[in-house]
Image (cartoon, rainbow, N blue to C red; front, side):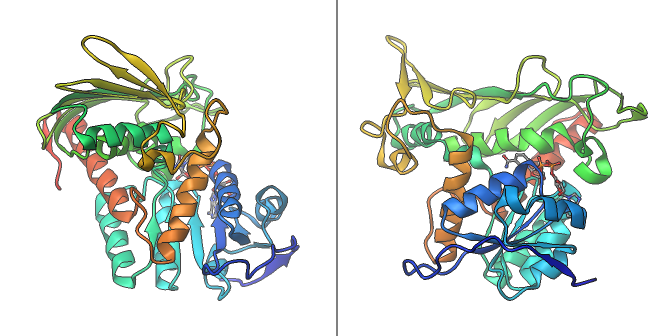
Length: 380
Ligand SMILES: NC(=O)c1ccc[n+]([C@@H]2O[C@H](COP(=O)([O-])OP(=O)(O)OC[C@H]3O[C@@H](n4cnc5c(N)ncnc54)[C@H](O)[C@@H]3O)[C@@H](O)[C@H]2O)c1
């Protein structure tokens, strides 16, 4: 591996403020997530000491947008640097495992994008490697960080929802609706054998299990590839556009979910609804300041208001009620909690590599079920 790098420093912020350990981050991947992670790192008081991408030119072009201090030709040379504490892996899915494992082997903490791996056995190795090394290793299931998601979780925890019996919802997008719509995610070699499910279904299942504290034990899935060729060259595509899923949980819930990247007009509509013997809760990611609370006699729409939120949810309120906060705030909170974990804290609800492994196991069960047209048990 070459070790050349291009030095174009942005001024590093004042170090030494406060007593926390440093958070000197390497960001690998310069796309949507690279930018979102870099912003969250800076908000958490960290520095982006280096960035690497798919080419030296892309890394250099990302210096300004990411606020990075140096651009590197080679991700592995960046990972190896002594002045890197944490590696953020923001690349296409097939690179998550090699880069995260290289970071752990180099003694770094890791933030690795979902899906942690494109197969469960590799995700298991990654979780084991992180545990063995004693490093903080987190996965951005960031919808957990919406205050109204935490509020829903607290209502379930407190018993206010009653005994849970039903969960359902969907995660719908439309950016891959047309045959001309294309992305690396479409190709199984880069994105993994399950595309829509790995990309967004993993978020839905994580949110379900996070809010309810319950676990999917068995499932039945079917997949559909609406566009079986894509791109200017109309190359054949094997990965699915749609997944429909039925499941049962350890706690006695039954439920269903629809995952789609070809639903016209739906941009990023993650909807989760859970019903118990006392009430129903419904959260829509496109209206994240609200939580619908349904009751037999009366229903109401709860607003994110720091004055009325439970402490567990109020911890994530960044601005007063009525001043909308959203997706980037979730990332900021996630990286801030990752930083606290590195400093020895145990932030409630911080998704780590075991959660990434859990998502990989569910994905594998979905694939097996869809391929075999059968119900499949999901391993704990
Ligand atoms: N947690 C979330 O909410 C969330 C949201 C979107 C995407 N993601 C995940 O983040 C990851 C990146 O997705 P994205 O939307 O940013 O994709 P993107 O296409 O916008 O960016 C991917 C980047 O990967 C980099 N890259 C490609 N090949 C590389 C290589 N060989 N070496 C180094 N870098 C390389 C490139 O810089 C590219 O810009 C994916 O795994 C995706 O599943 C997570």
